[in-house]
Each structure stands twice: as C-alpha cells, then as structure tokens.
Image 1 (tube, rainbow, N blue to C red):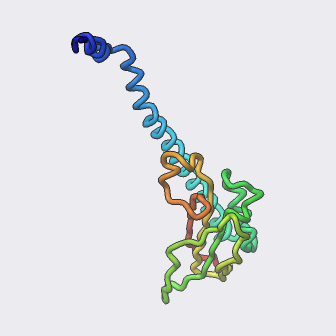
Image 2: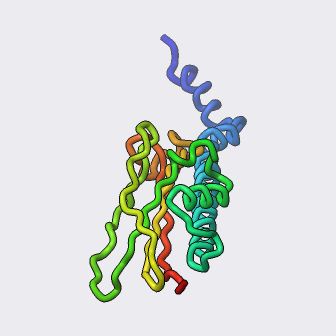
Length: 182
C-alpha cells in the first residue's frame, strides 16, 4: 500500500514553489491593462472628433452670421463644415453629415426636437428635414449630426458605448445665432 505522504509530498512542494508567480499575475492583469489602454485611446479619439466638429461648426456659423461666406445654402454649409473637420472623409461627407437649420421665434417658442436625426450610412441621404435661411435679425438654430466608426467597436469602451443600427457612433454639434442686418 502506498502511503499518502509519498503522494502528497510533490504537491506540497509544488504549492510552496514561487517560480512563475509574476507570470500568473501578468496573465491576470494584462487583459485589464489592455482594456484600460484601448478605452483611453477610444475616448480620446471620440473627444478629439467632437471638438473638431464643434470647432468647424462654430467657424461656419461665424461666416454665416457675419455674411463673409456669401449666401450659403445647405450643401455649401455641409461642405464647409466637412472641409474644416479633419476626421470626416470628404468623399463620404454627404452620407455621414446631416444638417438641420430652423428659424426660431423667441416670442412664440415652439421648441426644437430634442433628438437629432442622423444619417443611416447604408441608405441614401434623407431629404433635408428643415433648412431655412434666415432674414435679417432672425434667430436661427443649426444642428449637425455626423456618424463615425469606433476604433475598437467590439472591445472595451467601443463595445459599451451606445451606437446606431449600423454600429456607428453619432456626434452632435449645435449653434444658435442671429442673422446680422443686411
């Protein structure tokens, strides 16, 4: 009969052995560290894209407000915003950026739809929802919505963030301004 001590002795030595201890810790913590790294990069790129969209929108609205951009229509405004952002592909700008400009009456407030309508990149661009060029001293509201792809759509923050039906992120920028008198 084999003694239990002879069988358990190698297991006790294995349990006390500390070689490879760092490997186990590395194997457990490395995926967590990668997820934090990828989430940081993803959040940084989303923030950068949002800032660039806001900046392009502000510069374009300034041109409209001061009249330095000429008589800009929907396509002109869209192309100007696309040219001023460095992250929208110029070839697909008509698919990925959607504008809405409405005239607001501050004395008879009707409100603005709270949820912007973004373009579904699989389908053709919807007709312009509401786009009205204002006259002198009109209060105008311009909203842009752009659909972008996440860097890591199936991992970390890219997986957890809310996306549309195509799996794209929607960024919004809006601005209100008063048309300068002519």
